[in-house]
Length: 276
Image (tube, rainbow, N blue to C red; front, side):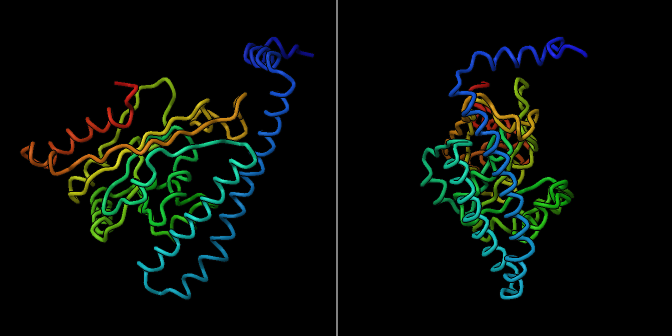
C-alpha cells in the first residue's frame, strides 16, 4: 500500500487539519454538509422555477417585457431567500455597503469583479429588475438555461447584436449587470478586462455603477470545486462604489472608440483598487 503522506499536497492538508481545534474541525465538517445541501437546494429550485413557475407566467403574461420583469422579480426573491439560507446555515456571511444607492439605480450598467461563483446571485438578490450579460455556455447548463431564457438575459455572442440588445434594454430604463472579466477571477493573476461593458456604456450613453467584491477567505473560485470549503467561514463584502459619468469620457475623447478604451482603463483601477 502506498503511504498517503508521500503525496506532498495531502501531507500539507493533513498538517493544516492537525492545527485546527476540534470545534473548528466540526465547524468545517458542518459547512461541507451544509454547502452540499445548499447546492442541491439551488439546483432543485432552478428546476422548479424552470418547469413549473415560469411556464405559468408565460401563459398568463403574453407580453414579453412584462413577462421578463415578473420573472426577474421572482429570481430576485428566490436568490434573496437562497442567500439568507446560506447565511442561516453558516455556509457564508456577507455585507453590502451603500446598498440603497444600488437599489435606486436605473438606466445604467453595473460592473463588478468576479472572485466567486455566487457573485451574480448575491448582487441579483438585491435587484428586483436586473438584466444580465451571460456567456454563451450558460445557455447549455440544464439547471440555469431555463432561468436565463425566461428572464430575457442577453447571451454574450455576436458583438453587434449584443450591443443593440443591451442598448434597447438600457433605453427602457433597465439596469444591466456585466462582469467585465468575462469569467471568474484567477487568484494571483493580474485581471484583464474585456471592453464589452465600456463599449455598451459608451454606445448607450449611460453611466456605470462600480461594485467591488472581496471574499475572505477565498471560496468558490475558478480553481476550487464547490465542496472545497475553507477552514473558516467565508465573508463576502460587496462595496457599492460611485458611478462613472460617461458624458465626461465622451467629451474628453474625439471618438467613441477612444472613449471606450479610456473608460475601460479606468474601470480596471475602479474595480480592482488594490491592484493599482
